[in-house]
Image 1 (cartoon, rainbow, N blue to C red):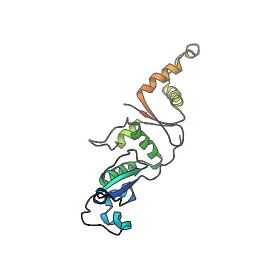
Image 2: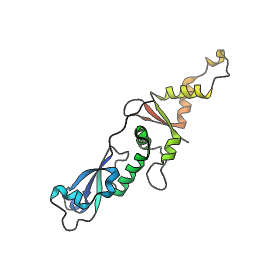
Image 3: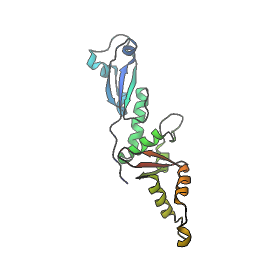
Image 4: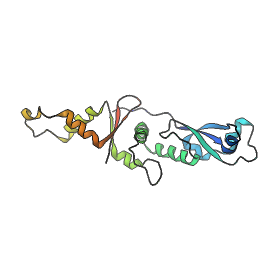
Amino acid sequence: MTTTSEPVMQVWIGCLHCYNSGQLVGEWFNAIDADEVTLADVHRGSGGSRGGCEELWCLDVDDMPVHREMSPAEAAAWGRVVEEVDEHLRPALLAWVRSGDYVADGTGDLPSVPDFEERFAGHWDDFDEYAHQLAEDSGLLRDVAEEVARYFDWEAWTRDLAFDYSVEAAVDGGVYIFRSL
């Protein structure tokens, strides 16, 4: 099993007053630091803040599992949740969220890291490879005579097994597999 790390999640934080006045004033920041960004940080390249500038908002995202506007606090929360997971597992966590079959922590959209760790079944070339390894590891046909085992319908068994899993394409090829408990 191999995985590669995903790029750093970033958000474009803009001044809402300027945006509502027809001006795009903002900068890209790492998502994990979004709740520490100030009006001065955002207005740095535009000559400073103007009267009425009070609120910041993440108007664009890059390399995040959700693609929508959000508050800087929510962006930072996403960054912190992803950082909780070992770096080599982060692409899998993001894929789990993108699959839509993830478990949210509490009442929000943030993924539950313990549920991710419990459900993640690894990075595989394809689901068939996973299914065959699972059958071998569990001893599915261990006590079955060879004459009978050769008639086992692997295709049907793998197809039925897939109903209990979520499979998401991996960025570097292959798939991530998650148990749907």
